[in-house]
Image 1 (cartoon, rainbow, N blue to C red):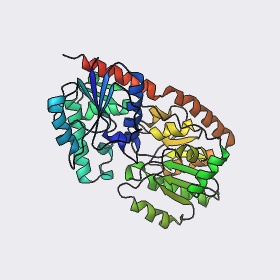
Image 2 (cartoon, rainbow, N blue to C red):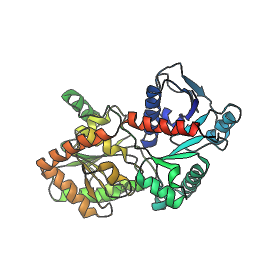
Image 3 (tube, rainbow, N blue to C red):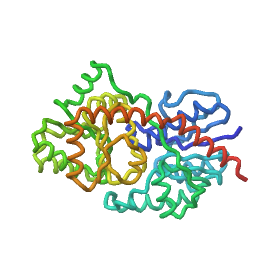
Image 4 (cartoon, rainbow, N blue to C red):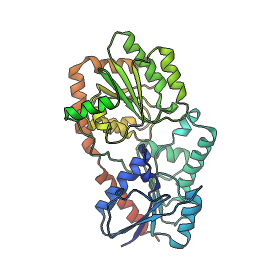
Length: 371
């Protein structure tokens, strides 16, 4: 038996997005899968009592600290009480850490689209990614695309990086309950037929081009709405101004952050799901949409072709006309929409948190045996 320590601080966020959900669902799957090893979960604030199931082999270690929690407080904890293996699933290794440490790197998007980040955020992302790659005993990458980036830009050796695909929340499934669908539509007032995007509002998500493509559909006479669901990120104000410029105020609906429990019904009710990102380390919303039986249009760059397989329409994210054409195809062609939905439901069976946890545990155990 060994003691596995995990930085679980991101899993406790109230408004979780991709990396926070990765942390939460992977940790839950690890604890369910592995009753043999001991686990110590580190938090910067006391977590909700029901965040993880109580178990004899799980210790919750809450260590509140005002600033620089990772590099000061977690480092301070590592010095006298280091676990056999430390796993950081959604952030950066503390400056003081055991030699047997594993970290997940989710993406290197800042290299491709530096303009999508503030100067400070860009510097910190570059430093933390390089530091993680250099300091960890082993690195987990969400995709082959991210692994290639780590090898090319951070000079990682190929045998130090293992690709482990995330899973998706099993609560994402086609919502069949008419009352639930109606309640969600009432909560986020959306009239008529709609296309949906889910994710943070930031430049890397390429939402300005999505708005331009959507404007084409409206000008062509389609009675359709666009739902943009996600919390405000950097430069989100430009999107609101762009909607006004295009005269789409009555057609584009910003819901803000949508709780996880509402997303399956909101996605199921959509005619199509669209992710036009310029770069993604994985693209978890694609799996969530497919699991809901909703046809997907997504970009053909970075990791997205890996995630989507043959179950989505792939488009050049820089080509507004191509994006509009793909959405028009799904809106107009019932047979195509049904075919994509069925392909998506089959495709997502390849991904699960149980599989992700099993492969991750194998890496942690291997690192734990290092001398």
